[in-house]
Image (cartoon, rainbow, N blue to C red):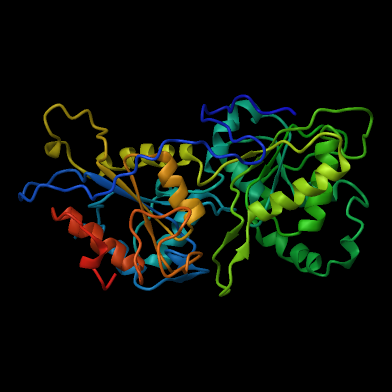
Length: 403
């Protein structure tokens, strides 16, 4: 079985079966403290928020999440505490997601504060900039990749339209008519169209949750088992690389019950592919809980931190990119958010909410968070973090029964 040996941006690859890296668990068990003097100093901690099930349910803010986020800003509108959104979701460019979050939450969110599942794909630019690649998923996957700088990217919708009868069930899909009418309102015309009927696909990127599973599985099997060109079954062709932005089995959306995520689609595709092809499917999965995602978030938080503080607040010997004593991962999914923080190790500290995927009475058995309580919501999480910012040490949870 072949495996990817390197990834363009230098992060360790996740090989097929989406095997996680086994990092020794070193997460902090106590909240870091700040000096109580009146001197303004850089925050010794940062925060990474999941979005679905923590900040939003669908398009609706959860509980007091807008008010909680406003507490991270000063009176002037600048950040007092560096934070970002670390989500496995996606399908639109980070700049547009930042604008949407700003409108929904009533605070100014920068594009650099949004790390989506597909954000690492931009690091494949050097490898695939001028190569034909296919992007699939909800939203505008080709636009996402085009904004990253890829010159020759087509969506799976566009790709399928170049092959007559490739989807034998297309005539029965009534929703395709509405999509065709709505397409003029989408910025897909900014993505160049190519005659791909005779050109080999060099890589496939699953940018976000696929919409038409049946069609996508059929066409991806065609592309992947035929060496990148459907209908050309002439010998043993190498499989083009396949990249998934995330591998979540389930996530919390607007519907009360959990919904199947990209990981469920990956399982379905792999199951079918392995039944019809002589070699098992090869793929690389990104997104949480992979440790390099948390390392990337830490690096971004370090870049965010000094941009909000004047040089007059620098301490002697400060290089400008200080290390954090604690980084808080606030999420609702133990197998994604908590597990990822545990594998990343120090300085990550996991906080588990009960407003999304996790609804248990007690801490999760397999992936217990560093902090979880009976009614933990985002507002309570931020309150405890602000206790830390004021210089208090958070002791056993029984001291905070209301959270």
